[in-house]
Image (cartoon, rainbow, N blue to C red; front, side):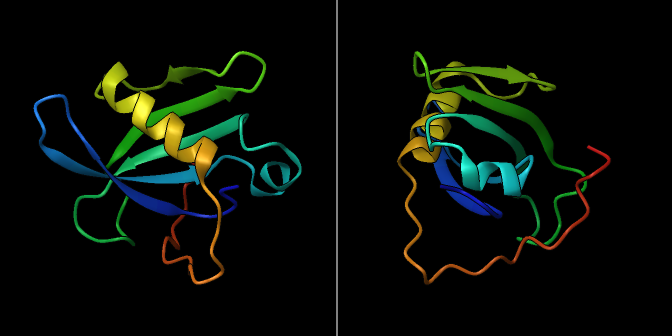
Length: 109
């Protein structure tokens, strides 16, 4: 379960790598939900893990009932990329070695 910011490297359809930061919209709610549901804001990892204010890509909402996802607020990510993100979020298990270096104000996004 993702309860704080996580960055993942995914591939575009042409194989080009891209780093995406994932933040749960409501971390307290995310802790009580299953990993197959919830809403997560997506950011382009452009400069560093602490600078995402210009890289908002939209939000992905996972539906646990049928393993589908909805993408809103953005147009840059393709279904190919969104499927990778949805699979990562659903299968994410914290190891205890992570630390949240995504200290930023995302409340206005």
